[in-house]
Image (spheres, rainbow, N blue to C red):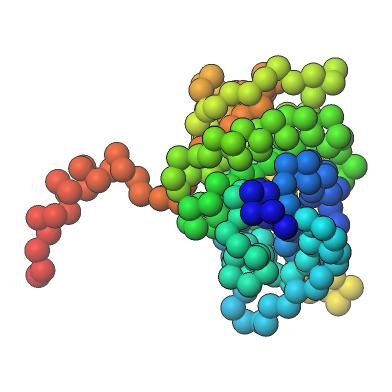
Length: 261
């Protein structure tokens, strides 16, 4: 193995057999040596969960020159941690997560296992990208968006990212086979309006299915939601600092003179 070959870690939250990750693997193999470490079953909505109550196990699924593939009985974050500490031969040049089946724009980034893997990479100061296609169908058309995924990943491999910064890349369903371009934007404001469908099991016990719909509160043109609605790929720089920086000064004035008693 030549040391100049770029090493790329591929993971996701839909599971190692999902069509989205198979598409991502195909693209990344054009760019360097690829090691896949992904959940052995779907882990959508797991956010930054880690496994602490069960042992982690991995299985080697495939191995050939410049390519290895593992499944892990854990979350996307487990996969990144186990890969970085044990399965990778060296520090990766890039971590990519996805291609997710469905949007991770706006508030979805907080629930997303896809993006949690990215943020874990960001914590390690490794350039990391999460790719999502705004189509929840299992048989979504990933082939038509592969050139965009390759171009974005190649640029990051060549030029890097600011330290401790990852990318949340959401791709709209192409209209008439076309995407207008790429917009670097901020996270739009929105939330899920959840509902719980109440049912009874055969033993007359209560159970619930979570349902609901997404509602946007932000239609500004500098947001991911606007970009996607208008046929552009949205690229949002992300990091793990959840500090509400604008609130520090008002809270200093409010709370720092609080005295015991």
